[in-house]
Image (cartoon, rainbow, N blue to C red):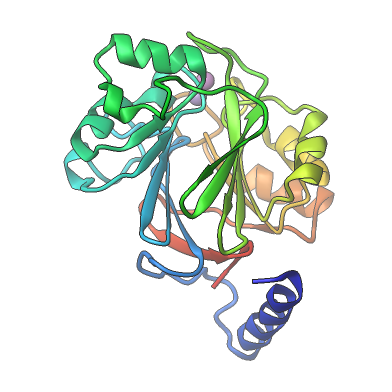
Length: 270
Ligand code: NI
Ligand code: MN
């Protein structure tokens, strides 16, 4: 879809939405296999993205995740697993999930090496048998990936985030665990972001104030908060919603319910 078509279909969608009264509650849709990207939050930083018949998991912390509504046994298919850094609430079930589904694991070079030392089979690693690192982009069938920096720590390698650009034009930034940093603006300029998935839980990452300020740099159409409501982190997204109204009133903040799938087309859910 080119930009004009996207803007035009957005206008149509918005007219339909204004004509109905269903504006307050985001529509629930089953997983789509065609146009659009289905985004499902599984608690903490774990997400499932589906597009064109492919399923991508990010930071699949399923077992032991207090807000994850499914078990590892419920997951039947995965094509790719993206890991942002080597902390337990992000690595989660990566190795088991990859073994059971045949998914390709993508993470930084050192973390992938550690996964391999811990039993990740060679067939679950990208061609070349290595992880990757920040810089350039990686092209796959139906999407491309850019690893972004993240200001945080990691038991192996450097922490990262991902900008995932799908073939229908929808672009999703999963920031990983990070504090705010000014290069968010640079990356969003190079790779414009439709949907920004941002940590807001404080203590280990950005708090509501920093996450709301980051919207001024990332300028997404939609923001989805993550990494809160668990352990000792900020219990709710209420403060982020409030702060985002001040810093970026044009951004649609969507507070997701774990387990529900929301379909995005170029950043707007419908
Ligand atoms: Ni972490
Ligand atoms: Mn974390």
